[in-house]
Image 1: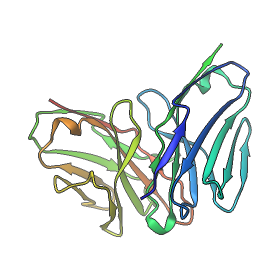
Image 2 (image 1 turned 60 degrees about the horizontal axis):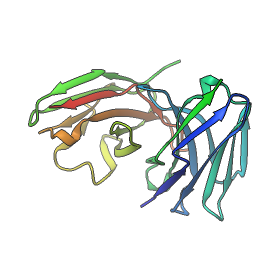
Image 3 (image 1 turned 30 degrees about the vertical axis):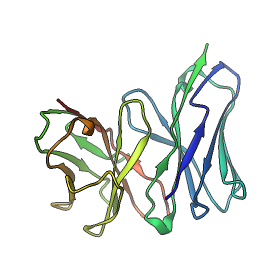
Length: 113
Length: 114
């Protein structure tokens, strides 16, 4: 089955700097890659997603890139703010395999003011 | 904006007891999921449900687990005989259409097995 690895596990940045989180996946059939933000005790919230027919997607300060050949995708947050502090999870799914999400291990991001 | 809801928010039970976790998916959604998250760990898939039957389940989802959609709105997860290691946050998620893959998560039920 699918396996998703995520790095780093923790990331501390200064407010205004950029943060980059990287994920790799194992199943070349995976075709949908969402990123979720989870604040303490809350539900995972989708912040951006990308499908396998696209190499890059941007939404304001957040961007995701996908390299299908290398089977990795990355989340980029620019101009970080204290409210970006949370745990971020990448995930992968395959529509043909029922669309279950396989999550990475999570990255705890701390934005220092 | 419609949201997935879950009850209870926190459930405390004794080992060996049965628990039922309840979810109300978004009303026009067709695909339903249960995930769990042990404290400090990643979210893990348990089971997916479509057209009144299980479409896929993980190895975690053994004979102690079952799911049901007893009416047009609720989606339940039952654990027949809880174990200490079942203590986790359980998230329900729903999705409207396979062609648009976003899954919307509920707020979760924190299950504590003593």
